Amino acid sequence: MDENCVFCKIVSGQIPSTKIYEDENSLAFLDINPATNGHSLVISKKHYATLLDIPGAELEELILAVQKTGAATMKATKADGFNVLQNNGAVSGQVIHHLHFHIVPRFKNDSLNLSLGGKKAGQAELAEWQKRIKKHLK
Amino acid sequence: MDENCVFCKIVSGQIPSTKIYEDENSLAFLDINPATNGHSLVISKKHYATLLDIPGAELEELILAVQKTGAATMKATKADGFNVLQNNGAVSGQVIHHLHFHIVPRFKNDSLNLSLGGKKAGQAELAEWQKRIKKHLK
Image (cartoon, rainbow over all chains, first blue to last red; front, top):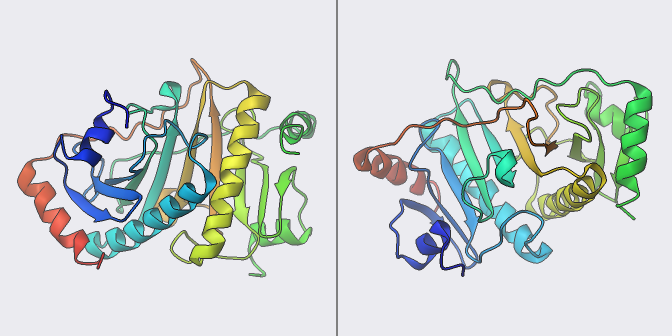
């Protein structure tokens, strides 16, 4: 537990939350600033800052909690779809530095725009990034 | 395999891709329309439309591939952070209906905005959604 972490305080009960799912290692609760109805966060009970910090076995459990919560959220909200968004680092939009997955129900004509808006890359550029990334994937 | 699916054709080799990671069940390749340098997609080799369709054991393997690819991407791109975005359903921005996780490296002053821009919800509203979602999480 990180004593200065809002999500750790939610796990310990020092700060209240609207819990929707809980198991041994994971917790899901509603976002207090929902982007759409039913927007929730699924977190690891233990404090890890980002996706790169959590041990694999715990990440496996956490993603199953995301899947379960997503399925229930779809049924409950009658949404047309949903986004799973997981931010790592302040530059990415991460505000609370305790690993969390956003589950954001989506509805026709909601006002949310999560478009990545990419532009077509050339083959040489892609080949260069491929080379650089693969070097770290051995 | 879904014969009309672009990602299934990438898995089978009928359509070329810039692969960066591969294991028995997962594949990662660069997005041809990158939002930022090193933007990749991590997919299940088997065809599942969304996060809700993949069996748990396969999802566990897939998220480990996401974690590995994310770690390598951070090193290779020297990014300041990264987003993991996983869209379910056309309304959410899913274009290829084969389960995939975007890994989007983020850099100070890049032009991407994935803000969820939520507004503070009242306690009664949160309690109502809590009740509805929990009903499907038993």
